[in-house]
Image (cartoon, rainbow, N blue to C red):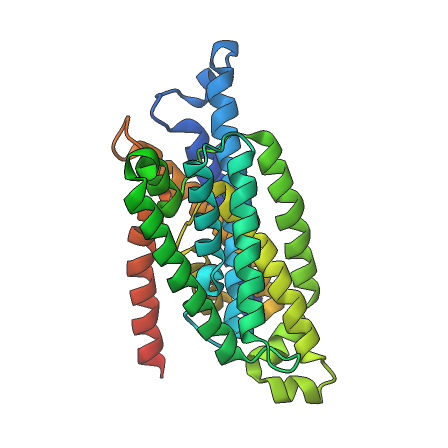
Amino acid sequence: MKDSNFNKKIFLLVLLFTLSIFLSLNYGSVKLNLSELFLRENRIILYLRTMRILLGIISGAGLATSGVVLQAILKNPLAEPYLLGTSSGASLGAILGMVLGGTGLTLPLIAFLGAIFSIILVYQIAKENGHLPVYSLILAGVIVSIVLSGIIIFIVSIYADKVIHEAFWWLWGSLSNYNLKLIVLSSFIVIPSIFIIFVFYRDLDAISIGEEEATHLGIEVEKVKKILFILVSLITSSIVCISGIIGFVGLIIPHIIRFSFGPNHKRLIPLSAVSGAVFLVFSDMLARTLIPPLEIPIGVITAFLGTPVFIFLLKKRQKVT
């Protein structure tokens, strides 16, 4: 019976994944049915929509997987990929790039370096005799985020005329970066990192219960935490430098999958990755089609979709406990 329910849920997830790609290809500010989309004169539209789908899959899978890892390591249900200051560092780098007139590959590169800088800063503040205490890591991430966000607001207030429009889209996220080289580079970081994270699924099961218990099972907890921290940081940095800050994916998707399939990370990691991809591709389709020809920042859509789902899951959990 349990296997039957599991198979039904997997089938539903695959169906949603296929449907999200179909809808994203079929709908946009330019109305074309799927047969028209493959005509020679419409190839540019097909290319642009395909790029958005690929970026949505990579970003959604990476953010959701990062959320799973951080919620397990930090033992905090509110942990998400931007908790450790990565987004603020990348945003600061991007906005500095805008002020300096960066174009093409320069802007994402500066954003990536900003994210790496924030990661190093958080790590240096949090580490204690070679260890990474959970509370120190969270507090360091919050402090670095607040400081860098303050610098961002300061720069935007001074150079508002120059950066306000680009900064707005960056801070709320967008899948409108059609640079294939950047998408490929990001996928070379995100996809292998997700596979490596999956290798540690047993360690995450143990650590999520308790670090002492994991140590008794022979797991090198500090070593595993550092490896996973680096992988999550690389995933988040490579996504933010292309897509900007897209909230709720890394927070809400792990909760939905955990609620539906249980806490076993052997299932939780791959199913969260697929669900994150579905969620972001579908959200992007809504962002492009709700108020045509205008495009809504995708972070607004994920917030509107994610908030009621999160409240529903919270109420469900309260009834169970």
